[in-house]
Each structure stands twice: as C-alpha cells, then as structure tokens.
Length: 99
Image 1 (cartoon, rainbow, N blue to C red):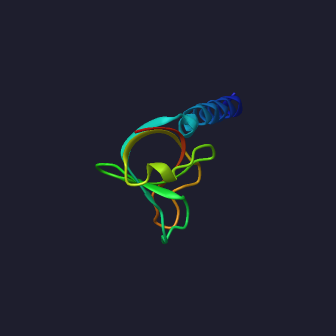
Image 2: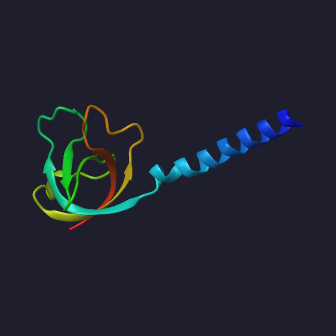
C-alpha cells in the first residue's frame, strides 16, 4: 500500500508540475522602447525592449522589428524557454507590435 501511495503522489506531482510549466508559451503584453541589440555579452536577440522596470532581449519569427526601432510600442510576445543565460535578460519572441 505504501508503494502504491508513493507512486500515486509522485505521478500526481509530475502532472501538476507539467500543467504549471506551460505558462511560458502564453503570450504576454509588454510596453517599452525597441532598440537594436548591437553587441551584447549574452549574444541572443536581434533587438531589446526597455520597459519602465526591465530590459528584454527580443526577436520575431514573423515581424520586421527594424521599423519600430527607437519607438515606444506595445508588443504581444512569448517567453522563449531556456533563457535567460549568461547573465542576460529574458528572451521574448514577438508575435504582434502596436505603436
């Protein structure tokens, strides 16, 4: 019986953990100024988004971000799994830009 309960609780914990980790795929809204990334120590992202309180590395698979450089915009973006690395910022994939 103890073995069954242990396996049951382990299985339940694994399911709950997998359900909660899906949040990184949800699109979120961010507002800030887009700048070209230039040379960085973390070496990811084509641009950055500077919000009031955070800096994000950003890229887009579907949108040319260059026309939005130096402009304050609102973006809809997904966090990219596995980042930040090398002391860099959170990495976002931009899905939509509104200026």
